[in-house]
Length: 370
Image (cartoon, rainbow, N blue to C red):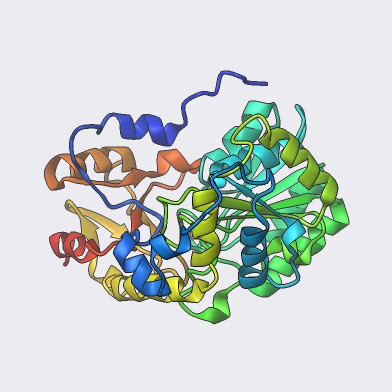
């Protein structure tokens, strides 16, 4: 077990650019709302929402109002008691992994991957294996490879669709096949669903894992698909009461409970989630049309698999040119943009993560438009 909390590679990488005032072009969330824009979108002011708000401690599991809002408006077949709110999604992951895993447990994860989804299990002392999305086949997932890993023993499978960093997703049939495999081999399934809602067409939206599998854990947050990172609210959804009770025990060593102000704002904002998503998708889809115009960056040829979900892509660098880390440094030096290299995502694919959810994405494209 590693109790030293090694610095995450993403944070370590970003440190070298502190103070350089680079423009972030790697973000995975849409353009964050301003307060004024958010108030206009939901038809309420913060002042009216927070009038006479309770400034005492919230319930450890989250206010009933917020948990009911989440269960009713974001999920099918989920009840308020199935939901625990947290101070962001990172706390959800920390609590869920520590509630479920023990040193020596085997964890399987889909790569490329957002580092905390595997670093926390590694810190616990778990063995982590990967099943890699196929960059030569639209970032597809080979379920035969998943079953091979399960057959040799597995405690937990970690998935993330819509996927960060590739923008890949699953079909409904593929997701059901994963759940069937988890049932067959008695594997827990943690699904990082923080980008759920950013499907460019509603037909791509998958059901929440927690709603269709008893040993499924769904992770959500207001900062990503809903573009409100200034409100620090994430949530765990799971039908297994024993797991939820253990999560609350662990949360007692961390935030204990959320801010009543954040929970009250979130409970009102998420009563009309489609209003936020529609605004975000408008920006995303307009920017998506521009992706085809980028065939090279800083003189380096790239290949973009245009996604049907989310607002980030993993642009593959054509072979024999430059490493992704060196290309990021080149872009930062000459173009003042910060991208993220593939080294940060547990993969051997030579690629860059580019976010296209921001309002200034067109300026980035104009610089590199062919």
